[in-house]
Length: 387
Image (cartoon, rainbow, N blue to C red):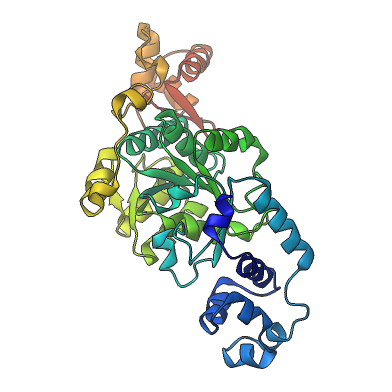
């Protein structure tokens, strides 16, 4: 089985799982413990005094039993139930090399799918869970283009920008990794169950530092974010408010020495403020996926494997953020209203005043433009042009 190839010694694998399940045993403590012994089994069996000498708290060192036997048994069953289920430790060749350099890197990852992707060049794309239509289109287009240029697209399987990034990679027959805040067998949110299945079916990967069976908890997601940034060459923020978790990911990326990229937007769009703050703080402003490729490609060289045009599901990477309906002809009143709208958010009342049209006419035209993909709605009853 693949899991056996990743961790060939069953006793050592089992000892690692016992250590992981010890209450209070975080990544830094576990790394310190394992550095002090010749094997995981020796660390598990060592007396409390030896643990204390390594600086571990007495309550942790004297905890008995050490680890949860029932959970370990359940994890071993999960690992052996499918050759696509993996336990990947820092001593395995499949462990992501950039992540391994971090002081708080997990000692082990649990994964479903093609674990080889963890060692490929990755570009993380993150953003709002409630984006505009333009933000979704940008996430898909950037992910698609960068997939064809050889990047694995990494994101967090959340609603909104994350899901659009995964979908963009899949649309190019590219590879994508979903980093989860649950165990690798628990899909959260459930709305993305079909997406997770598509990722696995396409040869992608679901990965987590939490064991199978772990449910979603609020505190898991900030920790999950450090993995998204830690595995990637760089992080792209598409749309984010000032309170967005995406800014946490970007901050972590900067602290980890990764490149941070941001797409600017309207000064009136609250979902542009996070990206604008990042740009003020030193993130690179980008307008196309090619901007990112040119920034990162020189250091990656031959590690990037381009997807041939005939394998990329059509367009081989030319970015097109216009919605499918953007080429439909508009009548004079529709075009007039679209011109008045521009790319800054506007209220219906402002459009009525600018256009001279009646409220009923403006409401009807806005609905048609939204259905056709020209316009998206924003919080507060505002409208913004997307094409």
